[in-house]
Length: 310
Length: 139
Image 1 (cartoon, rainbow over the protein chains, first blue to last red):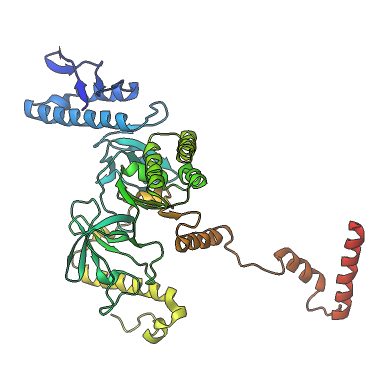
Image 2 (image 1 turned 180 degrees about the vertical axis):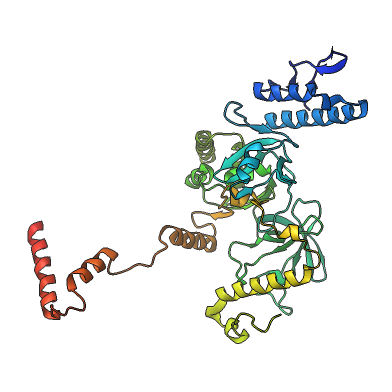
C-alpha cells in the first residue's frame, strides 16, 4: 500500500500544507515533479480551498484522493515529468478547450465534457495526437466499449442466452444465434466453462453488455469459441501495449515457438502453444513485458526461447 | 414520412449476394431514421447543435490497436489465412494490371487519337522498332 506524508503548518490562521510532501510506497519514495507541486500549492493557498470547515474538509479529501491516484500512477507507469503532463480527475484540459473552439476534436478515454470545458476523469498522462486527446491511465477493471473484442468465460446458460463473464460489473449476454451458421434448429455447441472470443455490440452503462461471435455479414472471422489453451488476466495497459502493431513481443516470440494468441481488450489473454511448457513460457514472456522497453522485450523473448530448448 | 422520400432499393435486390455492402448501408440508414422518429420528442434543440467535440470511448481506434488474434507457424491455419489476406489488402489495395499507368499515358499521347494519322500497322512497327532498339542498347 502507498502512504502519504503531508505536513500541515499553520499559516495566516489557515491550514497550509508544507510543500515538501512526498508519496511513498512500500518500495519507493516518489518525488512529485515541480510543475505538479506548484499546482498543489496553488490549490491549497486559494481562498476557495478552505472557505468553510466543511468545504475545506471535502476539498481536502478530494485532494488526498488525487494524491493517492497520483502515487498509484507513479507506481505503475513510467512518467517522464519533463515532457509529459500528468492530469488528475477534475483537472481542466485547457489545451483541448482552446483548440476545441476552432477545430473539431476527438476526446478519448479518460476525458469528459463538462459544459464547455474538457475535464479529466482519470489520473494519468495526457496524450495528444493531431486532433485527438486522451489520457493514458493505469487500470485493471474493464469498462465495456462497443465494438471491442473480448475474451470471456461462459458462466451460465439460460434458455436462448449464454451468460459470459468478461470481467465487467455485469456478465455479458451472448445469444445462441450469435454464432456462425447457427439457426433455431442448429444450435451451437457451447458449454459452461468454454472460452469465447467475442465482439461487444451493446455497451451501455444502463444495460448489460451484449456479445456476438459473427461480423455483420454473418461470418465468424477471428471470433468464436477458443479450445484448449490457457487464459490469464492482466492489466488493460499490457493488453494495449501488446496489441499495438509495432510491439516487438509477438514478432520476437514468433521466432522462438509456434503459438496462437487471442487478445481481449478486457484484460484477458488466451494463449496456446504446442506443449504446456511452451504455453507457460509464452505467458511469462507476456507478463514480463509489461514494464519492459522494446529492446528488453526482445531480450526476454530470446532468453525464454533459449531456456525452453536446453 | 413524406411522399417524396428517397428512392430505395427493393428488398429482393438487397437480398442478393453481391448487394451485401449496400444492404449494410441501407440497414444503417433505416435504423437511424427509426431512432430519430422514435426519440424526436426527447431530442431537444441543444442536442442537435453540432459540437466540436467527438467522444471516442475506445482505445482501439485512438491507439490503433490492430492485433486482436494472432497465430504463427501453422498453429491455426484458418487464422493465418485471414491475417495473410488482411496483409495483402493493406499493402496492395490496387488491382494488378498488365499495362502500367505510365505505359498507358505514353501510348495514348503517342497514338494521336482522333487524328487518325497513324495506322495500326505503323504503330505496331513503331513499338517493335523501339523494343529492338532497347534490346540492342542492353547488349
